[in-house]
Length: 309
Image 1 (cartoon, rainbow, N blue to C red):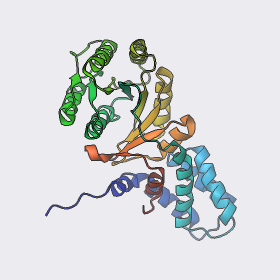
Image 2: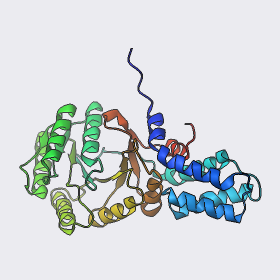
Image 3: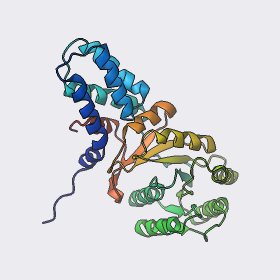
């Protein structure tokens, strides 16, 4: 009998172990045989910021502890509980399922830097949609990389969905136009468009993204209906600069964070949420289709704090 694969929360908690362990070690060092005084609170706030939580959330954690436990002994568990509460409260309003109902076809554009897991995420969502009885069309809009085109093709086969693709170096905006035209002609209700993994300092690639959006709007002024920013959970605070660049180049409507199964710096999701107030649709903890799950703020917060589900 094969060994049962650990549940999603277990894998998320394991992926966020880097953040939770770093935090736990800091807390232990700060509060061993010590009361919660002003100096301890300042050290804790610095430790939370170092764990990529960001200054505003770190301040709220220490304020909460100071309100209830100032000048008293404080335990590791109490600090973790306060952290989980603050993170959950911050993220709960942004917990949001991806809704691709409405005007047909729904156009979903995936953006993000190289290596963020963007193309794989598109494929996993295609499989989910197909299983739900939808009729997606995939567009391999990263025309810079042969591997990306092949990846979309493989996911298209898995999903049983057609793929619009062109040769390397083809005009990505033209491909997006063809994809929408094909979807309208053949009755596809969702179009999932991959884009090149743009580095935020590459102005010409950001210009191309703006062009893709303009071309889509010429065909349907309400589209794209979703622009999903896929962020790599291992990049820490760099996620902020990535998000800023894509917010400027396109109207990002939601966030997906991937790679929370490795050396994840999950606190960065809190920073992105604080800064941009974008809906968070999914988080990913692995390569399989089942490893992309709808975002649940409370589960994420407890895993980040190193607590049980």
